[in-house]
Image (cartoon, rainbow, N blue to C red; front, side, top):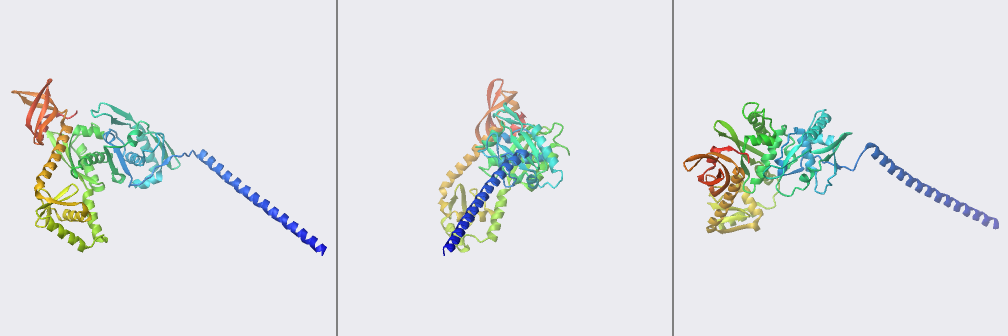
Length: 464
C-alpha cells in the first residue's frame, strides 16, 4: 500500500513536470510570434526604404470626378497636348482643400490608361511626353481685372516616373489657386473632355462652359461676342494660323470643336462671324446646354419604365383641381410662372408649352404640391415688370463688360468726326437703345440713342 502511494506521487510529479514543459513551450511559441511580427515589420520598412515609396496621395482615375477651376485659371493662357490636359484635369479633380501645400500625389499609369481609353502600347512614352509638356510649358494667370499683373508658373514642380506609376508635386505658387476655390469658378465632369482629341477643343469647351454657367441664372443658353485676336491669345493659337481657309482658325479649331463638343460633351454651340469692313474681326457664340434636353428624355423614360410614386388616378385628380382653381389666374412654383389657355399651360407671353415641357411642368407641380401658388392675374404686370428689369440689368452688365474701354472711330460730334474711348453706358432701355459716354481728347461726350450694331460698326479696338 505504501509503495502504491509512492508510485502515485511519482506519477503526479511527472505530470507536473510535463505541465511545466508544456507551459515553457507555449512561452516559446509566444516569443516566436512576437519575434516574427517584429521581423515582418522591419522587413516592410526595409522594402519601403529600398523602393523609395512615400505616403503620397493616390489619384483616383474616374470619369465621374468633378473639376473645379477658378475664373482666372479658365482665362489663363497656356498650350498643352490633349493627353497633358487630361492628365492635369485628373489631378485637379482629386485636389482637396485639406491637402497640404507640400502634398505629394501618385497616379498609376494603368488607371490613367483605362480612364482615357488608350489602347496603344506606347502609353509609357506618351505619359513621359505629357510630363515633359507640363514641365516645359508654363501658364500665365491674370491677377487683376485689367490683366496688367500676371503669374507665370509651371503646373508641376517635379515628377518621378517609376514602376508603372508617376509621383509628382504641384507647384507651390499654383496650388492656392486650385485649393482655395470659393466663388466664380467653373465646374464640370471630367468625362466631358476625355473623348476630345484636340487640345483646342478642350480649351474651347472650358471657355464656353464658363460663359454658359454665368448665363444659366437667367436661361439655358449664353451669347458672347469675342474678338478673333482675343480668342487667338486665349487658345495660344500661332500667328501663322489665318482665320479662314482649310488650315485656319475657323476650320481647324472652331468647326472641329463644334463637332467634337456636340458629340461628346454636355453642350453645343453655333457661331456667327462679324466683319469690320471685309475682314472677320469678331465671333458671336451661342452656347446651348444639352443636359436640359437629356434630363427631359431621362425623366420621360423613367416615367415609362419605372413604377412612379403616385398613381395615374391621383395625378389626374390633382391636375383637374388645378385646372378648376387656376382658370384665368397665375400658377407659380418657385420662380416659374404659368397661365392656362383652354386647359393648356402657357408662359407669361401666352406661348403654349410643347408636349415635353408641359408634361415635365405638370409632373413638377404634382411632386411639389406644397410649393404651388395660385394668384390673381392682376399681379402679372408686377411679375412681368420685375422679370424684364432683371433681364435688362443683366444685358446692361454684359454690355458694359464687353464694351467699356473700347475705342470707336468716326464719332460725329459738333459737326466733326473724332475717335474716342467708351467710358460709360447710360440711359439703357435695350441693346438697341442706350447712350454711350465717350472720352475724346480729355473731354467727355454723350452719344444718345445708339445700338449694338452701331457699336460694332464703329469699333476699331476691342482690347481693354
